[in-house]
Length: 314
Ligand SMILES: [Zn+2]
Image 1 (cartoon, rainbow, N blue to C red):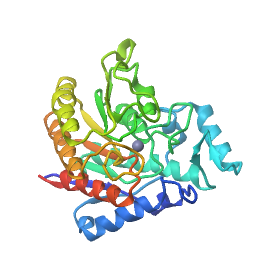
Image 2 (spheres, rainbow, N blue to C red; image 1 turned 135 degrees about the horizontal axis):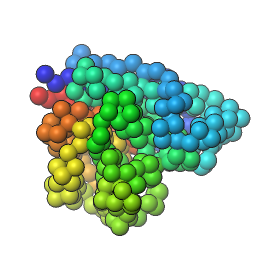
Image 3 (cartoon, rainbow, N blue to C red; image 1 turned 120 degrees about the vertical axis):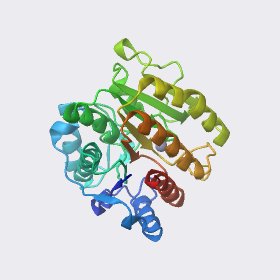
C-alpha cells in the first residue's frame, strides 16, 4: 500500500527575510492551513525534523563555505552572498533543520516506512552552489538528499527533476560531471539565474546526464506536457532511476508574481503522476518532492496539495 510522508516543522517559519520579501514564512503557513482544511493530516505519515550534521552539508558544500555561512549569519549582516539572501539570527539553524528534515524524509522512504513524500521546507535549496548562496537558497536540500541516499543506502542512480520556474544552477553545479545523478530542469529562459542553456548537457563522465529544457516566457501547459512526454519521460526510462527526487517549485504558475510562464495548478498533479509512474517502474515507488520556489502563497499551497493528492493515490 502506498504511504505518503510529509515533512514540516514550525522551525521553518523562523527564517525571517524581512518586509516585502517574496520567500516568506506565510508561504508555509498558507500551505499548512490548506492541507489541514483538506484533511490531509490524517492520511500522511508525519516526518519530524532534526538539525543536519555538518558532515552531511559537506556532501555538497565545501567545509569553508559552511563555516562562512555560519559566521556570516552570526555577524548580524542583513544578507549573505547576495542581496536576495536576507538573513536573521535564526537563518543558519533553520537551514540546518531544513536539510536535516529532508534527510529524515530520505530515511522514511528508503526504509520503506513511506513510499513517497513531500518536504515543506524553507529556505529552499536549488540555487545554492558548493561555495555560493543565491536565489534565497543557502544549502542545497535536494542535492544533499541525492548524495545522502547514495552514501547511506548504496543507491547508484538518482534522478532529480526540477520544475521550479528558475534553473537550479546549484544542483546542476553539483552533478554536471556525474553520471549517477541525472539532473533534468524545465525553466523559463533567458531568466534568473542565467544558467540552464540547452547546450549544457554535462561534461566528462557526466556528459548526457544533465538535461536543460529552456522555456520561453509566455509558454504554458501544452509546452510543458509535450516536454514531459517527448523528452523528460523517455530520458528517465533510459536512465532507470532508483530514486526520483523533485525540485518542486510552484512559480511557473500563471499567477506567480515572479515569472512569465502560464501553468495552471492541475499541472502539478499531472507532473507528479507521470513521475510517480517512473518511480513505480524503476524505483520501487520511491519519490520525494522538495519545496523550492512559489511566491503567490495561495498558488504555492494549491500546488503542494496537487502534488500530495497525486502522491497519495494508489
Ligand atoms: Zn524558482
